[in-house]
Length: 526
Image 1 (cartoon, rainbow, N blue to C red):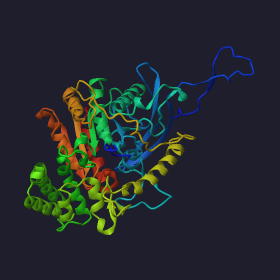
Image 2: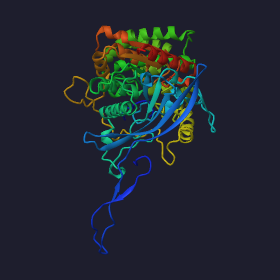
Image 3: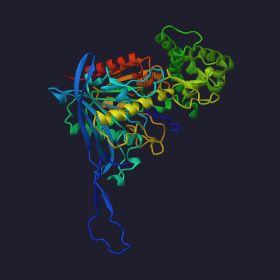
Image 4: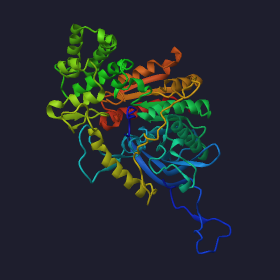
């Protein structure tokens, strides 16, 4: 959905189009066909508005530009439009030297409504933190944690989402889904958008940052490599929130790739433990979450992983001992863990932890819980977090974009779309002679960008209660990057007592803002 790629299962131009009739003589007979209509070539569109936001007691005036930019193929033919909202601080003496951050959610197939309206835009939708949100009318309030105090912001919707569309011949273009729906295609679409934005707005000399969430981190690795190596866009930093770069270590469906994915269970264990701690399902409840997770990580990377690696050679006594320790760390019954051969996927854990009450936890934020769709099922069939945030965020944005940003009247905004039927799952990482047709790993892409630009810095952030992209797995990926040891110092880490969308916890939201603002401030020259 909006923030995570489930790999195992894995449209009109904006604005009025002028109709032009074909030139030339027409058959005057009674059997003549009506003249063939042409659709006007799609154009960039935008609307400008002004506003202010208070962050840290400071009032920041800004200019907001909302619109679409047209993407073209190598033959200069329109293939897609991408929508965006850009906020630029007003009154800057050297505006082109102010940092600019490009932000996007993931999916794939998600717009960036979530980072925009819940995390860093000037207005924030009020939603429940770990609890359901009361029904409409919803509330839009000043965002005390907007990142506008540190950087200008450009929230970019993925192709086909938001107000953007694939531009086929009926919409004045020659585009098809295959042009933008795929790992490499999506990354190149974002690269083209960013370079066009920099050119149109004279921002090539600005300090430039990327901020991706979930699949947006996968995109960021590929995008950083394209911008650094192909487009000569010098990036200052890349911020990764709830990262997943190698889908081989996903805890979503490790059972479909037995043997190869033993590491997935070990890397997911600390998130299971944090979730059980939050819901008070541990046999002995530790007071200190951080100290507890350090203990769990040690077990996960040693005794637990060694047991998994033995497979059928693991004796019954050791199986029982490891299951009893897993029970202490997850709250799941020992008998269930033995029957599962010590292997529990994220979906199974979300279903089982609260099963005594016929409840399931959230996947992307396991602080949330809701009634089980099927109490006798194996996995949770929905995410209670979505039920809390989707309706209020979409409702408030649709009002805000039209009445405050003055764009989109008469148009449909798509928060997310299903791209999986058309998605190209092949990816050609740096150094590979051709696209590899299997589960993608974009760690080589990020490594290539960092080696090409040794001044490029990376900030990894995440939440402890995230069963979609477990924090321990993201940290593991950073330590496995094929880069010189000297470049590891360019990577910094910050984790929070929240879920996938860290900003849903008010205190963690403050910490997320502080970490991102400090990272931006530290990595550009004034």
